[in-house]
Image 1 (tube, rainbow, N blue to C red):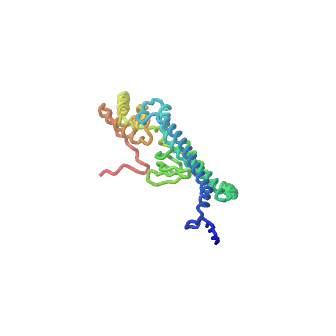
Image 2 (tube, rainbow, N blue to C red):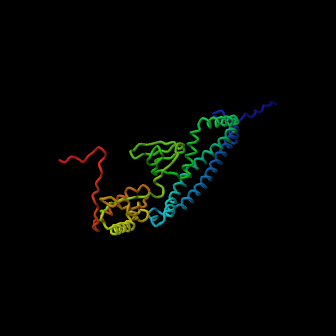
Image 3 (cartoon, one colour):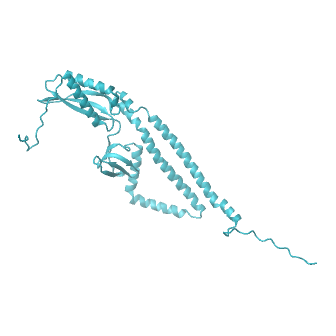
Length: 320
């Protein structure tokens, strides 16, 4: 009887790359799966926080949307008008703050997720944290101006001192704001020059685009003109302009007859005041002058020729 030896089972062949499928699957269930779970949780947390933030921003925007600019002319008192106009800017402020907070949420979630993933990859984060502490102290002393710029930028956004499109005076530069970041503010002056102003160096802000501005018009009339007729003409112009819808975007409230501003031997100067929308002061003053001139022509009110004194050392032009 011949015994035939049984063949021993050979181990399962590895794949062409030389990796055991069983071990590879165990590897996938280990480190990569834990990293994937951390990343997924981070994405979900960011999604939830950003969703809550968006709802808050939307609620603040709807609360601030009281009236459009044309309807704000119904406000009679200055305090009431200021409240209506400033409420219209709450939407911009809420959106700016929401954009900033979204960036903060994203950076915080990414940093925490990174600190959780590094130990899984076998990287000791204790030296990194110690180095970060030393680096933070060094930056605190060496980059004080940078920290000041960032903190000032945060307060500029949350306090709504100015926004994109506002006409502002920052001390060193006067112009229209084109961009606001946490470190610098970019604005363009009236000559077209672009200025970059560090937020930490802004000590005062004069904003001509918040609320309303006062348009003042001085009209000369003849010295012997009847001031009652002049006042009636100006009041008629005020009523017509207030009822005219073409001035909805520039006129806030009814123009007012302020009275006699000055008197000379040639003319009496009458002042007219009107509350104008931001950046509409100059067009409104021009429109008021045109309407008053037309009304004066209809009522026979004469505007005298006011002689202007020559500068020192100069004389009248030579006659030809």
